[in-house]
Image (cartoon, rainbow, N blue to C red; front, top):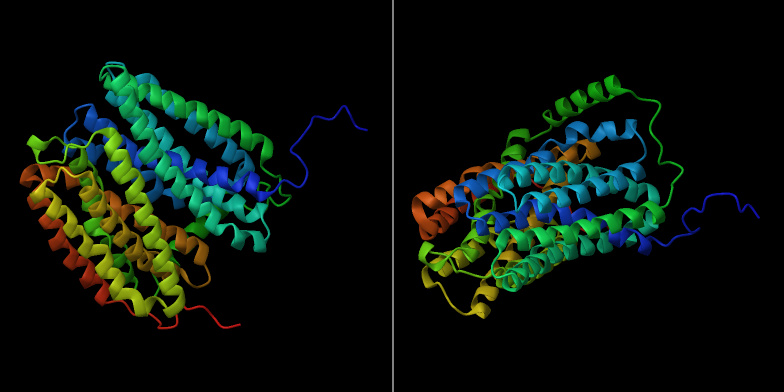
Amino acid sequence: MQTSERPTKPAGVSPWAWVPSLYFAEGLPYVAVMTISIVLYKQLGLSNAEITFYTSWLYLPWVIKPLWSPFIDLIKTKRWWITAMQLLIGAAFGGVAFTLPTHFWLQGSLFFFWVMAFSSATHDIAADGFYMLGLDEHNQAWFVGIRSTFYRLATIFGQGILVMIAGNLQVIYRNSIAFSWSLMFYGVTGLFIGLWLWHSYILPRPKDDQPRKDINASTIWSEFVHTIITFFQKKQVLVGILFMLLYRMPEGLLAKVSALFLIDAGHNGGLGLSPQEYGLVQGTVGVIGLTLGGILGGICAGRDGLKRWLWPMVCAITLPDLVYVYLSYALPDSLFVINVCVFIEQFGYGFGFTAYMLYLILYSQGEFKTSHYALCTAFMALSMMIPGLFAGALQEAVGYRSFFIIVMICCAVTFLVTSFLKIDPEFGKKKEE
């Protein structure tokens, strides 16, 4: 017996031991940066224009992610990157918690949200690569639904439960908003330290997970330039890029302002939901609707192909935005009515977003499909970042009611860019064995 060796992970660890927790850890910092920050800053008194401008810039790490993703293969293993980024994300959560009760809370929290965003984007790269190295092809296919499920659960946990906890702490501590949010973020810091410890121990060590010795920075850069050139040489490149940038333009305007509308005070034209109510409506019921819509979209496209369901999906991602026009005029007190409206909008978005994701796959087909798909996802992040930068300022200029009407008018852009697409009727259909 070799008792002198340091104990390592258990032999033959099941993917159930690490895949769910890995993708839970991937989803939580993203929802913290993109959604929880909105509720936080609204409660701390920032204007809608400031909130949407500051938080939209946090999309930037995901926009430029393709620039540094190839270099991860040069330094350390993907396993190392995963655990290092989880520790850094935990430190960023702790940094947000520490700075919130201080007089420099805005500068400090934004700095640590930026650290969290870059760490999360890097974690995404390493985790997705590690998933393919740590599992064989059968398990990769088997666990693809599991990883998506736990990513969604992280969204519900972050956008729903954590916001509710912050709201309950405000009741306990007599509406001490900064202190309550600080305690909640300290709790998440502890959670991420736990995830770091767990994954440091349990993640397998695939023999192929090694830094690449056959390439260098110069080689990667020349390949990246070649990838960009071939990306812009594809057929329908202009139509494709316009589709990637503009298909979700209404949602890019709506995403952050809709959250602000739900929690804004009644005298400002909002619904005045408490953090607990927001956590239920947007963070739980809305995410469930989004998930169910995405599942149904995948089933329909897999059965009949993307071309058959393209226009129903365009209608699904645009027309349900009308519920916010209704809510802004009716200002209902019923939490049930609000939940139904948010569920309808999010279900439609989930269903319609399927067309967008399938088109990214279609556009990426060819010799450099992995690299081209990464560039497509950069355009995807940019499509949400650009409208979000000025969405709050536009809302403050015209009010919630007129803003939601403008969102509906912008839906015409989605229909217009979709009308130029040329899609193979067989794309997306299940192939007969």
